[in-house]
Length: 295
Ligand code: HEM
Image (cartoon, rainbow, N blue to C red; front, side, top):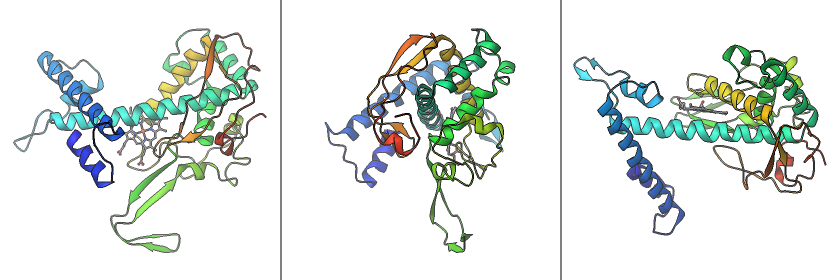
């Protein structure tokens, strides 16, 4: 995998001389590669399906297809695990980060969410059935991913000439779809920069109007999992703790593939004492271009 990434890096002009960031990155790729190959070796020795994703992939299609062994090779397994790690971790982590930030600046919303959680769950870990009974939590996550789309755009390459909005795109054209801008269209979402989870009580956007996980045959394979994961994390975290934003910090958006806070977001963790007005306001930085925040 290191060789492939090095090749791609060279093609886009990255230099891998010792001491440079790309060199360090390639070293990390090498470590990752070795670690996963070790895990694969250990798992092959046990040879039982332990139910985790790697085991499932190792046992998938493990038969013969027209006389050819169709099990995934180690290189393919390595490729799949790194895609899942990158696609599944950064996205959900940033979506959760932005959601906690937005909640910290909207005291009435967080008060209502904590009420909903404590009423339905009474401190416990949610079951899948209980998750269905947390509509405000669902709306908070949807609204957070609308206001600050964790993946702001995706791209396609036309496989054949295709008409689009009065133009004909030749085969091989790169087309970028801005999820972020779609989510900010005022004709779909009045006051688009206002974080208002209650708008979801009356709207039902189509997949062309709301698509944080993209849409169509290549949409995010982890969409359902991500929603469940984020709900469980928020339900457990918010029942126990209050995250208070450290005032007067600069929050800058950054990123190409995933939208992330450039310098992180500083918060202090308190037991859930419901002092939601604390830490509200005083935010600086271009995060204010994306969402209306208290002064
Ligand atoms: C809030 C969390 C997440 C967001 C916003 C998100 C968003 C996206 C988007 C926009 C795409 C591009 C789809 C396209 O090109 O049409 C994508 C692809 C993908 N996502 Fe996610 N994702 C999230 C979580 C996850 C998780 C948890 C996993 C795995 C467990 C995952 C696995 C993948 C994979 C494997 C792809 C590539 C699919 C393909 O090319 O066929 N994602 N995701």
